[in-house]
Image (tube, rainbow, N blue to C red; front, side):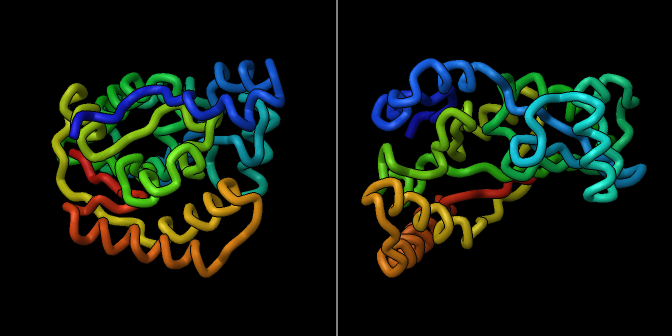
Length: 220
């Protein structure tokens, strides 16, 4: 299977069109990214869609107070020294970025020679993605700008100087995404069917080379 890597907007023409130009504006705007400097050896990059609507000092101060973390702006990355960190994590963030290649290059710069980059993303080649098609909740247009499978993450790693170390399944994501997808598809919540499809997705992932609904990639 070829690499599935790129902005996906094809199915948005069903429900999204009802909101007209508003979604077009959102689609073009990158979700604000924030950097949590956990300690001297590790940083976490996260998206600010849930709590912040623009990248400013007020939003960063709010995040610091609410979660007791040291929050930096995306521009703060450039001020961090080369080879400073043992690990950088992105939990369901990469798919929100306008240019994941730029971020990957910066992360490589920040890592020590033996440092690790851990990134969790939905898998657009999973069983639940194929089953639900345009109703698959993890497409999440327009908030998700890119969609990944294992081959596209390997491509991203290769072109930015990383090597894959390990892939870890996020098995609970299959159930959560199936619950949302059932509601999108049928305009009602069918818990039993969603749980069954989540189970089938995990079973398929186990049988088909770790092709689970969401995956954690460990790169170095």
